[in-house]
Image 1: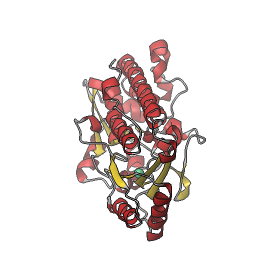
Image 2 (image 1 turned 90 degrees about the vertical axis):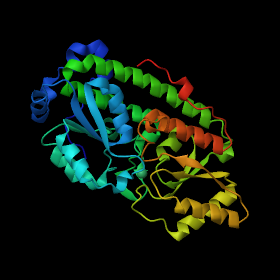
Image 3 (image 1 turned 45 degrees about the vertical axis):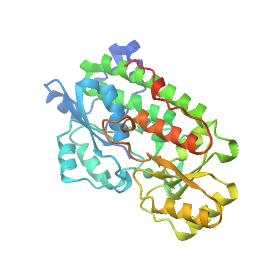
Image 4 (image 1 turned 120 degrees about the vertical axis):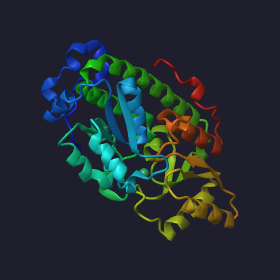
Length: 336
Ligand SMILES: [Zn+2]
């Protein structure tokens, strides 16, 4: 389900070439956008995003032209998120709102729909959602898609033109800057994607199995050739049954998997039960580290950025499963 205007066929990434046409698509502007833009006489406007992974990309593209905030913070599970009073006030005061879509933020769908009457409220996965052959199914619910698209860097790159187009439409005076920032960030993500491919391919083939607390890593698995097993289904709303745990212990022992992983936004008791179960069967599996699945690290830290989050995950997974990884941080192309 999407709110807000549709994305034109001309991507904001081409604005450097097509500046005269791409950001002057006034016919595509909704009344809400025009009204919001008219009321925005000051330099600097306010953007509110649901999850940090979106806010980080928006912050890179918008740079100093807007304030950007995420309402779902560090260590918070977006599947279960219900807005606080403070978050409601921020949503209501924002000039532009970005959310993931694909029903990630299932508890605030109505709230986002209501807000879209007054301002641009944009699903960043709009382009991804148009390509159903890219999307993976939600194992728990055939009518839903798996929303964890940020786990595949190439998938997450597809939110860049959506964000850029939305910002260019809202504040066309900054279009050139947005296009420049977007294309520089695109190059950083391309380098990050290459790092992930290279590093994960160093894991011995029979150990390329990622066992985590919930099914957040299927896009990562498909993109980078890793089998993925989550204890809980796609949404953390479903409780893992005892039988699921026992089946997974059997699997870990049989495949001699060296490490399993906990997640920053999901309770770790099920993963610890797996470790104990495997150890009781004589297979010493360890916890290979904490992965950022549905929320990033602390604001202001490296893992509190999308690139830092992915770097942490990829480096942690590769190191714990017998691959070699030096970290991406030193190799980020700095062009911004
Ligand atoms: Zn999730």
